[in-house]
Length: 397
Image (cartoon, rainbow, N blue to C red; front, top):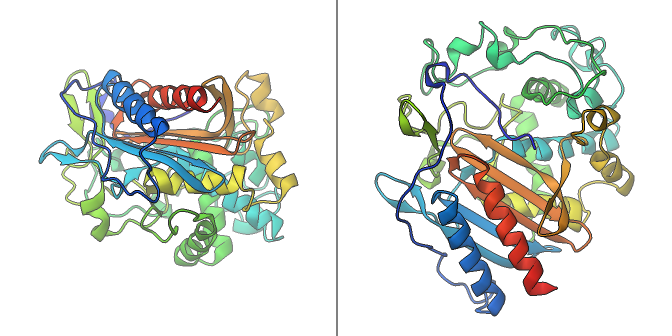
């Protein structure tokens, strides 16, 4: 399952791992209207605490929805190690590549509206500014079949990223900075190869088509607002805007490197606010941050309530591309199916900047589970997700 959008960190080549520590489970203060004291609640609280401890004691938010209604939510551990700050319902986490699912859904909505076409070369929207634009289509970008080399490894962009010798903390990135590192695609449409570069290009297409970054931001915000069921999707639980006032709410992402130990990815490179490579435009491969509830509400609206796309579009989205099937990695348009708790889930994972995310919907039952963590280790979110999925299945079967 693809998770990580790798960016620079040339100075930090090492093995990711886990931090051992002494945390206690810290479910947020009870809200009787949405978190009743039931046996299911207690079993899920225990499963969260035990699975998080086994996964290295990350800071965690987790939530379960069923057809738009909150079944359970819980928090565990610390959002920030120093000073010690517990995870709360209000803590923000970077979603990393989970964001691809959200961006793809918006793109398909624009296709439904007749503003874009899946099989038209993207030169129709952006001219010839991007190598291969006369051949590459939106379908190729969405299915990771466009064939673009990894722009993060390019000598033009890599030095500008965290760990590179030209990185400037607090200086926002632009599309022009990314574009200088783009190379021509290799055999576009032929093979599946998970590509962050493709989603950077997709975001550029969307921005040009919308009339600029701010208009695209406004349009995506209006679209995601349709997903709110428990809480409004108004920028508090899901955001693509890097606002300094949100810094106090953000968990810090932690990643282990063999030669350096556990690194606070928010402060190691000298950042004093939300790192400029963490979310927001032009980072279409990891556009969003939010709470577990914010991320869950979106895919619940998409896969369970079916309020964001038409049935035929949704079916096309979740159908694996022939190229991905040929690689034995079945993947649709920024979404894939995976198993947990003896159930099939449709969703996506993400990992970057010390954050690890997994969200999925059991479409047969209308159940959505979302786990966000601030330790990027060996499948941290996935281990917790599987334990919660098993616990929920056994308690509700």
